[in-house]
Image (cartoon, rainbow, N blue to C red; front, top):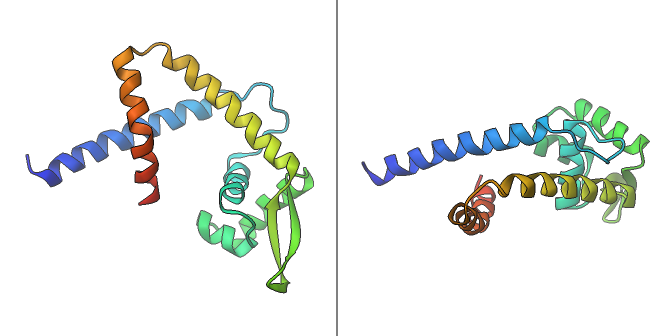
Length: 147
């Protein structure tokens, strides 16, 4: 097997396992978090949280959806007070959207539930598997940066 073939085999297995993990997490309810955003809303909220304030157009481009679809998504978040609008300090004609304190609390609550769900599943793995996953976390983060 060539190096390239080995990398393709790893990539295939990784894509399948990460997809399964993500799908299983999405299927589990997020207990104790009221008013959970929809998946598109959550994607926009988390992107704003990670990347900082952005325009509707910037978010639409990043999420690969139309600006009109992003406007509808952001409208729901804004109505619930999870994001707010401010004028761009560099160009007062542009409107920036940012996560509010309520949005920060929503994200933190969801992450806490998901962390607890994953921790509950980790107890079913042996010590070697847990050590392997612990060592893989930084590599997975670096891998994500290159996609």
